[in-house]
Length: 581
Image (cartoon, rainbow, N blue to C red; front, side, top):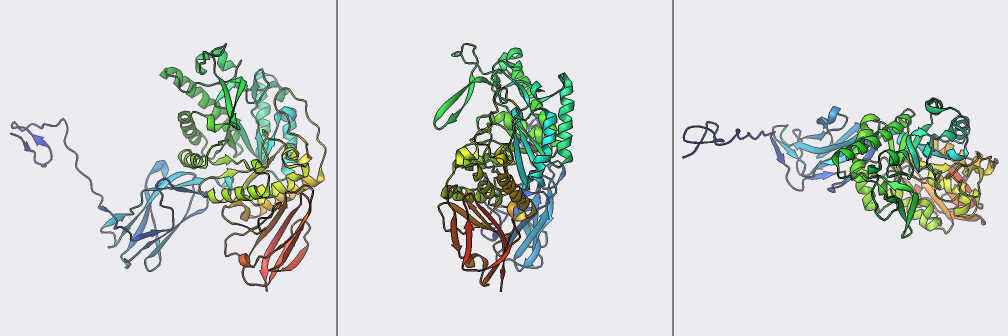
């Protein structure tokens, strides 16, 4: 015979002893119910894997409607971890806007990934209901991510760190607020900056100092950048090291084995146009090593390497760039990102991650990657580029993209687009038609006909001033930095009639705004065009469009239905515009 003890929950034997090794726990009710189906209408997405992003200091704006239920006793709350210490939960109150409609506006203070869920009561708080929608996610990005104008400096052709410090004035004068440097670590036998001999040593060609004092010189460069308000971006090369590097010599078990190779080590590589490119100078790091202690030592070493360079980036409010993230070990990346966030809470993480859009969306939410490198240089023609810009805006609610003209790995603008001066309209597109983050590679402003070689021992380059290109970049950066319009997604209308060579876009703060910027960029390097545009479908019924050319200050009034833009080869037109009677 068995029975229950006095609580009525724990079975006991005939001798009164419990038959369980511990008491059955009680259910702790929080007086919550699942809400009735179909009564709650939301302003935010309701997909199971959906999320959205905000910047620090921007308000989280949410609206809900409780249909068929409205009384003074109705209460609506947001149950969330947002802006709470150590992930603690808190409640934020929705305010009643109109019968059955409630609104919440909360200014976000701390970056991070947060969850929230709506709860409501119809009887003044006696009984509470959960929204039937599962917990939603919002990622709060650092405010500095809104405006990235980044200059990629090629260390191999730029002298020593003292020379780089002198270059900061030129970079700032062009209007850039960030500098990306290719890896500075000691280079292996191939001379590639991405083939490291030692991950914790600065290559001797970059310094006039000896040994450990090189980092004193480096710190002076970092401080000089910070003093100018220039963020620094350092590459993290996580997948491979140089074939003759210190790690290979000291810890060969940290390298993926390959019995087909003479030295028994697997070479790294990448896919390009359905072809596997094998890198003879690079061997792959063995993050999946089956021995737990060896694996732990490796992970710790590579984490400390990442934190080492992230520390210097963080001193400037800067970022790290995860090279070839698409080839990285996902488990280690998850571990590393947690450590980076813990050590450097305001660090921006950018990723070179070339894959399908669904995977990008998944990893943007899972890993909270701040920036992904766009690849618009693969869309050289106006039609494809226009479509790509639309994609960048459409996905911008969930994924932030860094969209430079070219990268250090691609060709120069002259090679890709037909002329050095093509850099100016392409920069107008990436900056003034994008979503807030763009840049150029060193040499672009000088009209270099070919990309700068960064592999091997190079001599310091001498550049010749190109006032047309440099002036165009400087003007675009000034306009870009002065208006918040260019730092948001979704606020663009192409009004060029799908022209084959010219992109024309209207940028406004909102669809209702009656003023903004009219941007025209001619991608044709040989021919000019005259476009007659009708802006009345976009700006409303007033007959006159008043404009001011930001390049020369010339003001002109156009009939709203007949705005004429004349744009020469590689030309750019930037007009402030507003409706007028």
